[in-house]
Image 1 (cartoon, helix red, strand yellow):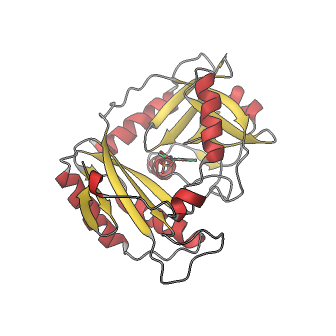
Image 2 (image 1 turned 30 degrees about the horizontal axis):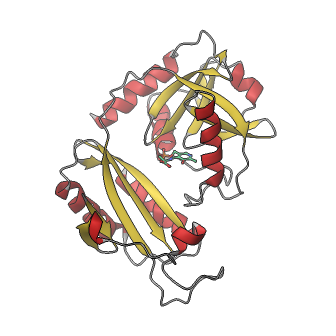
Length: 276
Ligand code: PDD
């Protein structure tokens, strides 16, 4: 396959990562995952703007504009003839002798992007299993940082329990999934953690909230407790990879009747309409 390395499209085998790349040594960088449906970026602008925001929040100067990245990425999609899948991209603070402090300003960030094929699952996805776990991460979860140790540890808890996603909480208040945002439905109102430093403001989450606003589905951006979640009518999680998916059991307990609920199904339908 082909990849983007800095400004150029190259063969993957022609690219080498330096052992002193700061992404490799410190996780010093930021990333994005963008879905491709029908050969086109889904919410590409929102993702690329978030990449720029993440870079800014770690004081990294990006040597490209959003438009330049978009042009390259579209070339890569057509080069790879990608119809359904994702594009992964990351920016690190560059290559420099190892020392914690930022390198001098002449050191350029390193940009890498590549595609991966994923079949489009369609709108009727079966329910997922969740497990609650402590949110052990740092306090800048709004940054889409390459440092994912907390997220990885959480996902492993889920996998070892035979679950699909780990639902993280701080002192009983649910923050988000290990690689997704989590929402509940109470009295027909969708409730989801507000965009703050404690969660990544998911693009799928933002698209979903816009769908709620446009289609008169009541919603509030408010944190909820594990107890509220366990007693909710519906629980769902959202991300670029899982789109909008119901969670039907948590910690081995059924949520309501243990089946996808009407608000989740309505949102799945509306989300599919955005894609198709
Ligand atoms: N993860 N929260 C976290 C911690 C995430 O890692 C993600 C996405 C989300 C959802 O964001 P979005 O809707 O913009 O994909 C929320 C990506 C897909 C990943 O790391 O693979």
